[in-house]
Length: 239
Image 1 (spheres, helix red, strand yellow):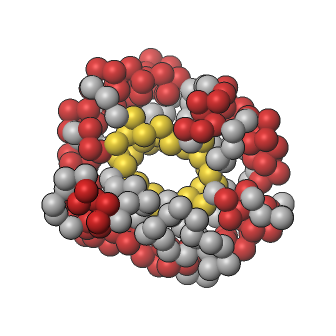
Image 2: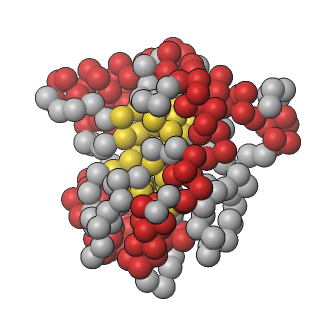
């Protein structure tokens, strides 16, 4: 077992909990958190959050909530009951929705006597290009859109955002160094980009100022996942 790196989040994008738990157990101690996304959660439900937490460590639930404020507040409270370390909402849901997420999580955490999970706002998905953004009706450039959403997330009381590594500097300039930026779309030079469009290597993302990077298939689908995780941790440490 190698040493963990405080910036590395390993994404467990699997269709079944047994497979995800096997990988998490093998990689326990090698990441700051394990990400449970929509594929695994919709297959297994809240048991996925508890199971990964039990065998692997802290969980980032990539929930991507987007609904009316009251519904999101209730969902945030339920997620907090699952004792996750971090979860997210879509910043496009607006200021009141994001405030409701923080309120719901805070209220439940106080009720349970636990620390509130970090709440992040998803800005623009890393699979979306400038052209793809325009098709959705957003006229301003990618970086301006990401920064606008990040500022709104900060105003709503969120702890940070999920954004491409390409926008890290812009978000930090606008919101301050203490505002977290979690970056998906991270691919080491020895792995393919797959369905991600706006990608960077771990070293590049770390140098750009990412607080956490999210890496999935280059680790979990590798012939030796522990070795792949260690290579990425070493690359982060050298940044």
